[in-house]
Image (spheres, rainbow, N blue to C red):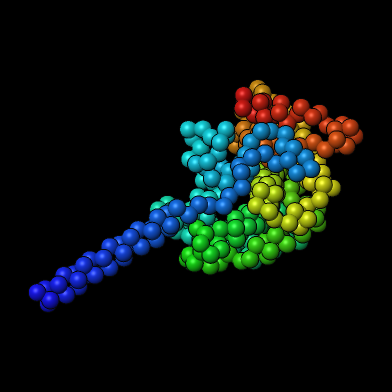
Length: 309
């Protein structure tokens, strides 16, 4: 009888042990899948200057910080374009979609090692591309840093792409130095070919859009905004972007003959560029409104014109 009781106790002990292990495993699984991302809000940029258009930054190459959580900006097509969260999931192979690996690798390579050209304005399309890659990696690395601590989504995870991403400060310092240098990023052109600046100008606008998203991320996640551009810097680049857009618009109109078929459909190329860059434009500083002579309704008018064309 005593041996039987001992046997029952052993059975109960083993059963309880299995139950405890099962419960602990369930708690671990629940904790794993309940981890949430620490992300900024997908919103307009309002640091020093409020965005001219109401759109969530980033908006030109990516769809906000999370394309599944855009609030009032969400639409049925939102998931067709990745947000920052979805891009980072690709980098860490947390997503089943690996179609972007080659593009991600190219941006990492460019941001890590490529240098600008000697300054020939007729050969600087690649310079704007470098700036765009540096802006992307500055933003991505900041979000990674804010989700990589103990108990957070990315803690302990890595793969061949994520291992190549350097510290956020590396990309931030390069990007801020690039903008503060006020170097030329828009391609030069000959008379009658102003539409050719569209490629470099669009890349600059995408870089600026990513930088504006970085400002939002610093504000929302408690970064040190003193490390970012000053109001004077932002004024300069807003003015630069809108003046280059105005120039391209005026030159395209001056050289456009509605009665002649245009080789390469360059008017369409030009208007698409104008529309894209208009979305990248941040806003008008009051000095710019008062002293530049630029029509402050022009970006919106150009965007509507581009849609019609």
